[in-house]
Image (cartoon, rainbow, N blue to C red; front, side, top):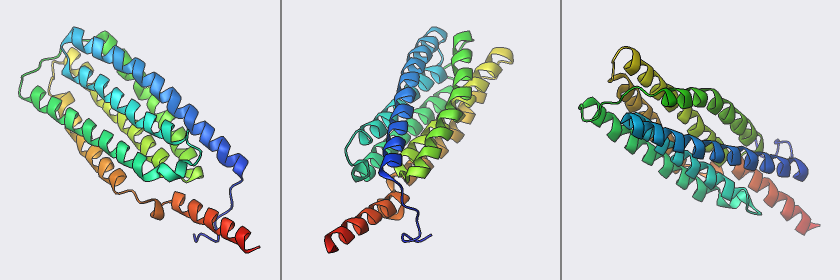
Length: 227
């Protein structure tokens, strides 16, 4: 679809979508802070590196959501698109690095997690909550044409995969003693985190719907000056 054929979005609708994204990321930040505290406490009690890593991952999610929240608190959010994408990219890379180190330590036998009922509960809740948040933010981001909102929604979805991996690992370790299940799944997730980080780092607003929206604005402004 060419820029000229894109339907023009009203300012009122655009402001509504900006507010919606701010509410989504505000809820995400609040939930992840609670998730982080519960997971780190539960992980410390059970000597579970997976749970502690999951809690620290929640803090990475907070960083990503906070970056988007900051962007959409500006008068002109699109102006900060590329910088915010870079912050999200760093969050992906940090997530991948920590998960990889934790997984290797677990596979090497340096860490042997114990049963954690609290850990199973918090990861199960995340498996239910996170997909909905990701879908809602991605849907809003696509309508608005925001590459950062879409990138943040991908990180939220990645958190769902990590939640599921940790949950499966905790359950298998508690029931069958398969302590290797969690680190294997975590390494697979780390690969996806690196891929998403690279995509966010290479994000170019000129090639995204945001770029098109900015071009539309420039065309409107130019037409006004020509009148």
